[in-house]
Amino acid sequence: MASLNEKIVSLKKERKAVILAHNYCLPEVQDIADHVGDSLGLSLIASESDADIIVFCGVTFMAESAKILNPKKKVIAPEPYATCPMASMCTAEQIIDARKCYRGASVVGYVNSSASSKAEMDVCCTSSNAVGVVSSLKEKDIIFVPDMNLGAYVASQVPSKNMILWSGYCPIHQAITEQNISDLKEKYPNASVVAHPECRKDVLDMADMICSTEKMFNYVKTSDSKEFIMATEIGMRHRLSKECPDKKFYFIDHALCSVMKMTSLSSVVRALENIGPEVILDEDTMRRAEGPLRKMIEMK
Image (cartoon, rainbow, N blue to C red):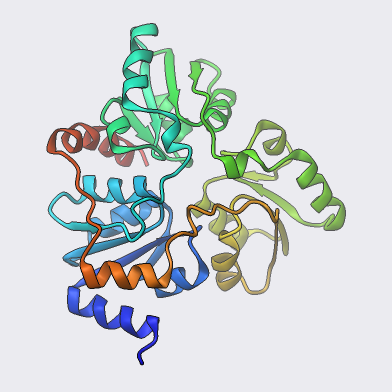
């Protein structure tokens, strides 16, 4: 009987599919993927691919973004109920109501949001370009959704703006505490602290580097440090260890996103066999969400 990996390789060729996996996915899913990275980078890779089918291993907002940027391609989400908790903390209706309360404000939305929410934003941003996006806007008042921690970090970097922060957050990064970092720092005193801006301010204040997942790879590769305390989701350990085998990485054990781990080799096989579940978005939502996404890409 063929292994799951062999089945995936065979089906991928038969379906003319490309498999994309986020940095937080299970190690075995990352290993079978054609490309591993962050959600935006993977969507851009998909748009340049000649594949007929995009299999997006991650959470649903990522597959939606891939569909919006690649409307003529079939996008498959192996686990259609793998919904990002943070993305669920801000709805399109709530953004519409917020605009009524803060008339004239610009709405900047983290890419970690649903397609319907993106359709109500002025511009999207990633964790790597959020400061640049906010700085570029002429409006002083900025409604920043849905991540209050990333929004607070941006506010600290762009004091000229009046940042109106949402109350959303990533439960995984929110649960990383100052004490967690202190405990690891005591154990590994020579380790550099690298933190994702989705973390709380007290954690960011302890970091030697604050950056997105993709920039973390660049940082650790070029850093003189040989040890790193990583304040982000534990799935990063697999790729970091593969790409930097001469360095050591220490994670907070509870920083694990079970939703990101829902996609398995079995669900990828089923997705390729059934050519589904397919991401289906209505044309109006796709049209209105594409604008904020394209603006984000232009500023990347």
